[in-house]
Image (cartoon, rainbow over all chains, first blue to last red; front, side):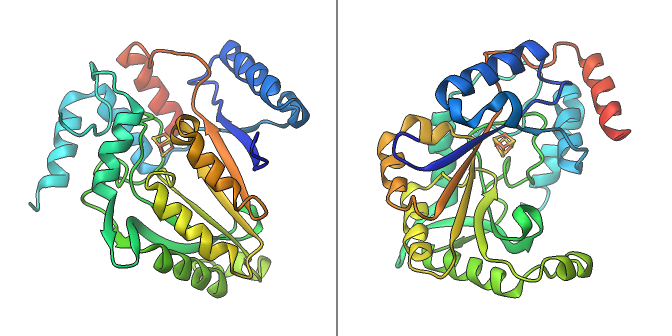
Length: 78
Length: 201
Ligand code: SF4
């Protein structure tokens, strides 16, 4: 922004992974950087969608065997 | 060091800038027409009221909720290399063709005149991106949207300075992933509930 580039912030603020307090801190930080943008009102908020890759990544984090199977699947044809 | 794939319990914390360098080695290569970079696809979509999109391979973060395709985790396995000129041409072509995967959207959005790089992290491969912007600058297209997690730009002032040379046409959308250093969900059982809540959406 200091270089005159038009830039706007978005954030992954899905309450299932970002606590309210953290969202407030983020908005406060963004407002300090760019007060005109008024992120208290205008922050573009992202939520987690149930895409196949998202679900599998979450599952891989939870389940080591699933993660190993997933890795193997990508190397099966090597 | 082994290339960081998706996260698993007990993963070793990593430096995103190091991972960016590792990823860059995989997703870029020198070509006759400048630095080439890997993409999985070029197409137009309805977001931003119609935009031609290049889907860049490889990222420097490993968000567990990431919706990007598997080219994030296995960049060596996905995509093809394109020169900056080819990327620009593919974006222009995708814009000309408009939205082709849905008649519904095609009827609603009849003209696409914005361009963007998205997908994983398009700022990986600095010279490649800057060279694409030269082509965009000299094109009829008025707006180029760069979607980024901001990690690389935040660590490289020269990169931002050089992007500013195209400031009449670019809009940078930085997507923040966190405000504080925080842990991942602590208990696997919490994650199970979390996955279930996602599936119910
Ligand atoms: S920054 Fe974006 S592409 Fe990269 S891991 Fe996070 S959500 Fe996925």
